[in-house]
Length: 275
Image 1 (cartoon, rainbow, N blue to C red):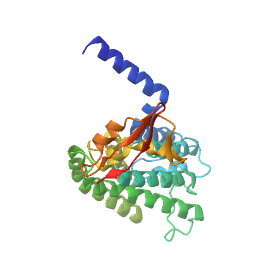
Image 2: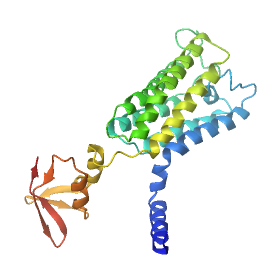
Image 3: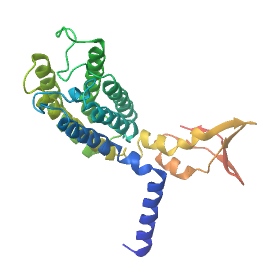
Image 4: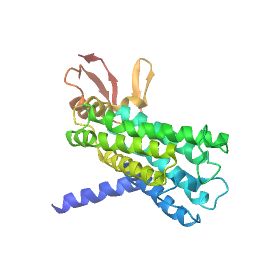
């Protein structure tokens, strides 16, 4: 690698650092890591807490000393999912929805460390019901991620193969976590953590995955310059210059530009499409 290549790589890294892009690109890693770290620290503030027998949500119970650590842990997990890049629009919608339900599960705290179940425990409160509903919705979304990821053509081959391999263990861990919770098993905490470990690993893989070049998702990313366009006097005016040749290379093969007009301010108008 030449000196100019090293300088270019350094400048690129500097731009990503100052622009905050690195924060988004690593969100699928620091979100789950922050949540896991918060759970480990919060457990030390809860006397008699068992990682094997107790759910993580119990660390965020109302009035408990551990809640001051665990509630921010839920917020970090939600932020990581909200910011992380995704290789397809469908996965993006699912993970963003899971981010919202994760935040709800963290801020709608359980009433007790034992996490009373609505319908089976007479001590369960409305807050317990809201937390349970948000948690179940989050877990269902997480369990569905490998199934959706395995069938999307814009995903690279390695990611689809990984998704297929993770479907069975994810569903098995999801069912086990549900059964141990409903039965009040002494291993329900361990079952929940096993499921979370699989999900967090898949979120990390998702955050580093990029759509295949030439796919419709990649073409959509390449043509994001249209977002800043506005109609004025019969022309499309742009607030920034855009590399149209790059966009055209990434468009599906059935579509291309038929022409455009260029003036001193850059590209101002696209005349139409040929399909």
